[in-house]
Length: 400
Image (cartoon, rainbow, N blue to C red; front, side):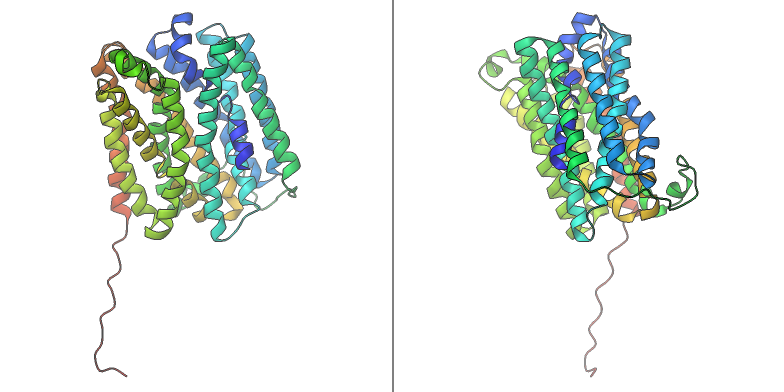
């Protein structure tokens, strides 16, 4: 499932990686470029409630395969038909809808086959694989576009989801159709009434706002920063390589975060990591003039911290959810998270334009700060919900 998850994401970051090339070719301002990024998450957000909730009723493998085929079609359309803002937004919307039927339905297919303490680790490895998939997407897009052009980068990315769908259909056992309750497939009231899952769902939304806003713009930011110190950057890693390594390191951070959460408590781990991540995110944009190696290290630390609470948040939702409505719970979790992912690139691009444009260093600082402030606020909210540690029992002398 982890390998299939990585393969399904070969087109996930293709647009973000090629943004510095596509923006001038299509004559896009920063808000328009951010809108295309956001369209992907809008498609995801629109499709995930239905597709993930359906896993409470039918075999998740069927949803997974159909969705993979949608992603393939969207990437091929992006390759040969995209001409600018409207067409690119439409095809990114379709790609996001397809990914909606792979990520959480894939996790449901996995958790249907794993139980007990191993389930939390399985969730951590699966969600951690998201970073590997993102890195593969960044590296392959940069390499193929450099050799054959950006259209081939999108076209060849379509091979991954095709392989992924076949892996899941032939690699997992079939599950019978479920008829566990009489509620409508899009009735999420039972989920929202479950108090135990709400902190994880809302925390995940803030996490995704920071994560996807950063991922959508990190390559463009690094290209800008590289231009400020060309002498340092000439013999160093390219912006695409720095972004790919950042995403490659993040799965390790995600898995370690979940392991730590299993020992110290999920909520305690989440609010601490979320606070530190928010601070580093706010600092990153103002650090564009740092020497290139130092900026690369800061970008890697930034992505590791963002991902430090990712698996803990999702594992918490799975562990706390009622198995009868687990698909609906995961649908709300993912819908709010990727809904925030839709808004974040738009907010980032709008702040960048309002602060003077992507040629001004302070504008990048304010744009990244717009991603970090929500994490600081959510950290405080989750911190308030952490129960006080139970006092140690007093020793009673002389009692037999």
